[in-house]
Length: 284
Length: 142
Image 1 (cartoon, each protein chain N blue to C red):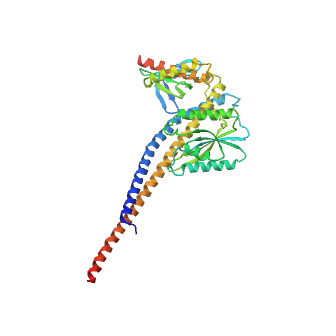
Image 2: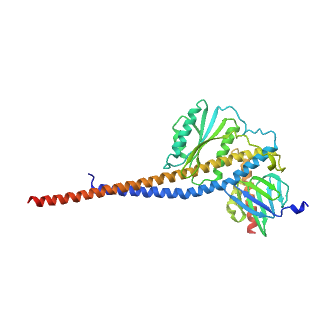
Image 3: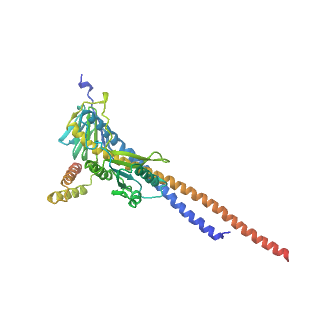
């Protein structure tokens, strides 16, 4: 039977762990609210971008642009968006597993990776995959300006025909309880559906529609990259919140059962002492 | 008859990836088109243009507002103007000191134009942005 003092010490240690997990949960919850707001704020820009694109697309007959050009995939680029930190449940593990599955599925292709987030970089740094770019520690202060260099590098690589496809692997924020791993093709851009019907306004174009269209496309990639980063950030915070909530509850259960055990041990000691006294008295 | 149907106000939306920078009913707006400034009054013909860095101004009621914007796009409809830009800073929010520094930095880079490490296009854009911000801020502080 464990000594009383050891159990007390154990309870104290679990309690301080619980304080940490509870604090982490609260921090994640507060930051999650801001992250969700940011997703919400980015929406009008993305929607407007899409509607401009499709209305410009309707004006031009030749919609061939380097970013829309499909070619047989020999060299693929994966942009893996993980978290910078752990303690967020299966968030990173799921991403890495999905990436690995994707790699296994397309063994014949030459793969390179751009790692966004420390966890993905650390995992693939020790594996035989080429990491050609890394963006770590960007989630602390996530801004549109951080999506731009990522967008620029994938656009450049694709236009210079150094890669034949660019896929994003990231966690989508579905709800606080669920995140879904997404594998999305970013380049080539899937064909833009031209606007049609009555909504088609006859614009005066200050610049030729083709020029506007081709300038809109990179901007569209930028906002899509930004969206993936925002989704991932919200999903990470939600995952961390849920994980820390579970940890806090587990700590509580543990404290309860340890307290019960401690009381039992204490009671047993008292009973033993009484028996000793009583049997000693009876013997005389 | 056509005049009677002309709207008297424009619904102006300025959207950036980070926020909705303005959502206002305005009577007049001008913005920096890529090939020169454009002024828009209610009832303007539908128009689509690219924007350069510069100053966007509009009048809402009796108040005049001014924002520094960098490149983007604008869609004009008779009763609506939608401006898509990467950044839009209100004149009163502009950090003049920072803009001055950015301008100096860009000018410095442009002076060393023969240096192969200098990205000229990048520096030029930075200079245009800095100037746009300074001009916009000047209006507010004057």
